[in-house]
Amino acid sequence: MQNNFQGKTVIITGATSGIGKALAAAFLNAGANVAVCGRRQAALEELQGELNNDRLLTVQADVSREPDCKGLIDATLEKFGKIDILINNAGISMRALFRDVNLDVLRTLMDINFWGTVYCSKYALPSILANKGTIVGVSSIAGYRGLPGRTGYSASKFAMQGFLETLRTENLHTGVNVMWICPGFTASNIRNTALDKTGHSQKETPLNEDQLMSAETVALHTLKAIAKRKRTLVLTSQGKLTVLLSKLFPGLTDKLVFNHFKKEPGSPLEK
Image (cartoon, rainbow, N blue to C red; front, side, top):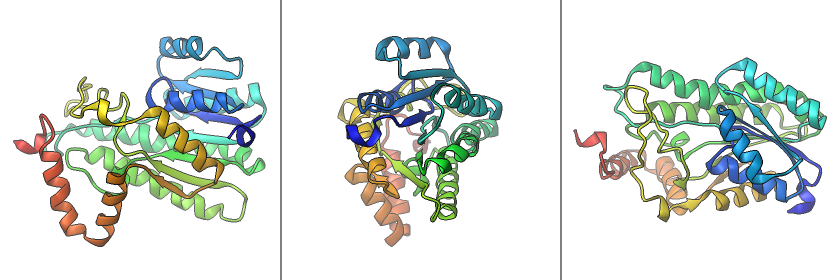
């Protein structure tokens, strides 16, 4: 693993917690230069202190804002001179039925999950083309299968995967690899920060986080997939089964998914 990333420059969006933070630590350990962004300066300073590495660049940026994304790319190029890998990890989730949710919640999710990926990819692409590098999207099973109570999240991840698949095809002969990763349910902060129907953080998780795959394990799988220049990576047996059933038996999967999410603590489907 060390030889694959020694001297490479990696950008990771949304890296102050969860999978993004684990990815930053893993790439630094593998010898890469790492640039990360987050919306809160205090969280970035805490990350810098924790990882304590002069190959780490932290940039305050909100990926829903195009100028911030350009600023992240420019700062990375100024410090490290190139970009080899871009990991579009910044994301936010939601939990509310479409009939109840404020439309601003869906716009927020599209702005962060989809447009953040588009903006960063646009400005990083020239350097990645020059270095025959990799663009990665951290997606979700929700990008393969619409999940009830998560219309905005599923829509944003479907859009992300469609964008990345098109970008991959356009660059089939340029030496650039484009891929997306679907971690499945991972122990992270995304469910605690997920938006409710009014756009406020729900501040709780409906899952037992202790029984989920760790962010560090996801990071390890991700580094291996990038090194092998894979097309997609779906983690967890539940995730792989859901993708397969959605293709083969979509009607049955509708019922299975509904019943699964109805059993969540506090599920809006119970109403």
